[in-house]
Length: 383
Image (cartoon, rainbow, N blue to C red; front, side, top):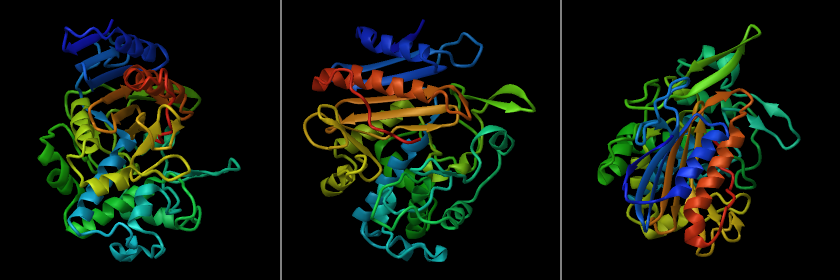
């Protein structure tokens, strides 16, 4: 059984079935909010806690993973609008202490074209894996309340060879956004949490979004996420809802709700946050994978990444340990899909297939009818 709380007169069986099927595919719980021409629909499926029967909350707090990156990109662009940051200025101008390659611009950080090694590790084209800070298995479990300083993560990344010369390739790097957040703090002299309030949360009346820093807490109420790992030959499963997210830092540490994500992304895509020219910059994708400045552009009619045509949706989903977020919008902000998912995660990321299924089913159900795209596939959205 599942729960529908908003607009009880709306009959959206395709959405409820998608939620039920998503849970069947391997996720613990999902909460969904859809806003479109038919109004608002909110529902959930699965369980709030492992081994218990209570249904997931439909507006609980959850860790949003890499959806964090879109908030940071927006904050940077708002500071560009204030004349305090140059989008094509060297990032090193604001961060002189790291010895950054002077060719790396602020734009390259936001678009993942800097070539900077990701502090969470890299998978190379030949299958070689180079590790960064621990975020899998017993090693992560044992250090899940450890605090990593942003400077420490940046220096780890810069101690590794660059993936490519700045501007000559594309590679998803969490460290790009650690650097971008540090640029915000350097320029303003204030913490990112303070600037987030000033630039985004307060103007939009958002009260359910948190930049937690090193705090392990998730505000109440919330659903629960879990992690399965091996310890001395025995499999263990623990609740990891509480953990210190400084290991991923600005790459994916924020917390929000489906309501706040809708408020934010509909305002952003509807042109109510950024000047038109900067929103256009954000939504212009590079050629490799369709990534703009902190957002993916996906043409449901012609395939992911073209960023053209009436069937384009914009998104930045996110996944972190035990939790994930979906955040999609039509180009005018009139149709949005926001969701929080919880799971039993593991070092093999075996829940990844269920996460992809969730993306495909929900995007097809919500945007397929709008654009005539049917069961649309989804562009990659690294976690």
